[in-house]
View 1: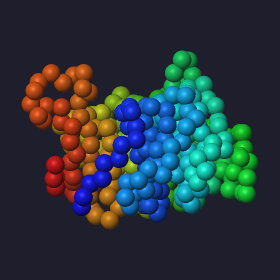
View 2: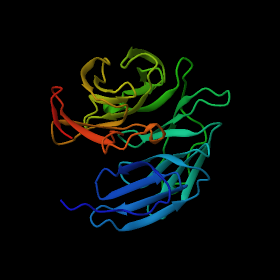
View 3: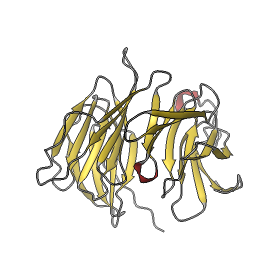
View 4: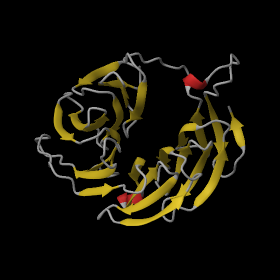
Length: 284
């Protein structure tokens, strides 16, 4: 497989996302704009302008009509993918760190930052797909305030039944997706060690977490039972479950400011592959 280099941002990337069909790729970065790419040839489809700060997160509706982005400018923006027009902006008191459409695309989840006296929140908006995409609600349908420990990331479970959130103190929480009511939590990682990413299996029956405690955990969505633990020798930034193979992938590395030696592996900026059903390492 020949790699394709995509050059469209001037500052560090924050997130990339494929659409459901896999023919489009969207990237966001600290340079305030969103790039859309054709995956077949790497050609840039277009650029979405409108945010006034770093963009931390992006997601695409299941039918690829709408694009959602969350930014350090304290807004979520909803975009018409085809025209590049911003059709709705929701404003918040703090930065938006994660956005994700529900499986059916009818709702949008967002995680906001805890800062400047404001508690972090998880909010959900209903999304409309009429002839006029500007016709979106101003009010959220669910607002969850994270009083004990701020949510770092969140996502939808199978059939959009639950909202699963990961937290700064190493816990994972399950919420009722219809009411926003708290169900229960589990200490998935070492206490007071942030979970920085969660990624779901294709059927969303389980998910994997990436922690700064140098581990990833495979967890059941239904009861939050930890099924497997995958060790690493560096704090992790992300983890993913491959859709067609029985593997999980871990990625991490030291902060550049803490790198003091000249060994090519000293920062441990690498990816590790494990078989999902065991802790057997399959590659580097």
